[in-house]
Image (cartoon, rainbow, N blue to C red):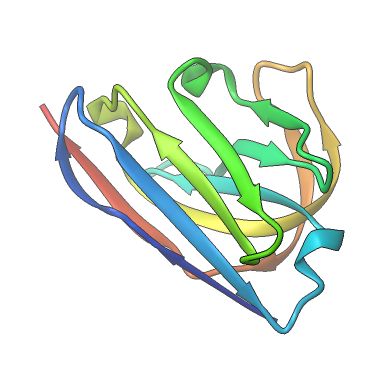
Length: 124
């Protein structure tokens, strides 16, 4: 299984980025997917998740700004990040997940396969 994340970089506050995570050696359409992030000195947190049929969950800090989506034909999950702030600076990683619990300020899930992270830096 390989999950390859890309799209990170340096952006000014108020800007946007689109992260991609391409999957290989996996039946991608059978997996719920998620994006996590880990800021320096902080614990990793789930940012957004998407089920096999497109249902989405977001952590409160990113609601209304981030959009997770998936392309089951291209085996790719995306994270569109708008109105970025310095607080969004972190390493972002994609993962397969199960047992997503939404309806919380901070959704929870059980990650399975991980991709390598991509660094997002938002300057003020």
